[in-house]
Length: 106
Image 1 (cartoon, rainbow, N blue to C red):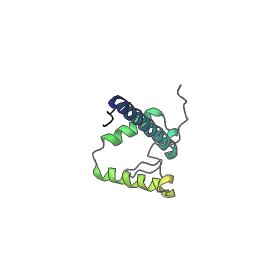
Image 2 (spheres, rainbow, N blue to C red; image 1 turned 90 degrees about the vertical axis):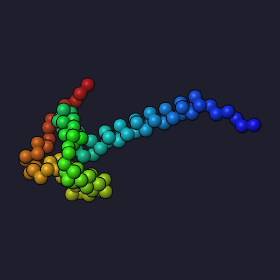
Image 3 (cartoon, rainbow, N blue to C red; image 1 turned 90 degrees about the horizontal axis):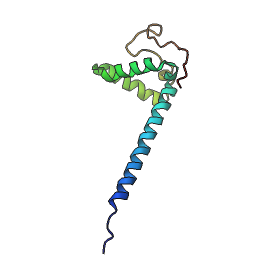
Image 4 (cartoon, rainbow, N blue to C red; image 1 turned 60 degrees about the horizontal axis):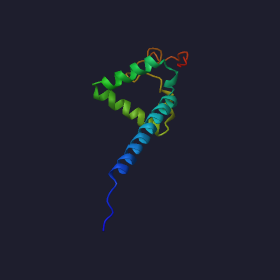
């Protein structure tokens, strides 16, 4: 005779796994912010940049961002050196990515 399945324990395990994956993803996103140097930006500015990227409709710009990101993850020094520059072709002085004083938020 087959053993009956314990659906409650299976659901609990799946919930725990989903929570763990969500926490890992959140941690990795934080590491990405630090690795790119974006942690030196004010939180409001970083949020604005991310919102603009999410709302962007320009497929060519998104493809350019994707390529830069892929190069960054492959360890390209060139991509890391340009991490603070504006991807729309502006010069480094025009991008607004100058190091800001870091503000600790409590």
